[in-house]
Image: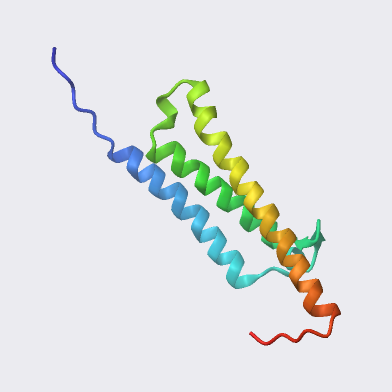
Length: 116
């Protein structure tokens, strides 16, 4: 039995291109901060931040998909690895945003001063 070596150079460049494109979009949006996205609120936060969170979740998913070689696995294994990752990221965002909003309201509406 002989094992034929398959070159993955094209796949490496594809992964590099996709992750670079998403990162470039994030950087451009962060520098320009379009007022249409920055000044509109959705669920207590501006749309630009929601776009950043969505792009970050996409990058995390694609990194797991590409570097853990999930595309060649059965769908049950893919779901067992990727879905908890996405759930935990969304849950972390929920906790951070809820606590951050609470802390902001405490400092904004009380006599406690912003001393940090």
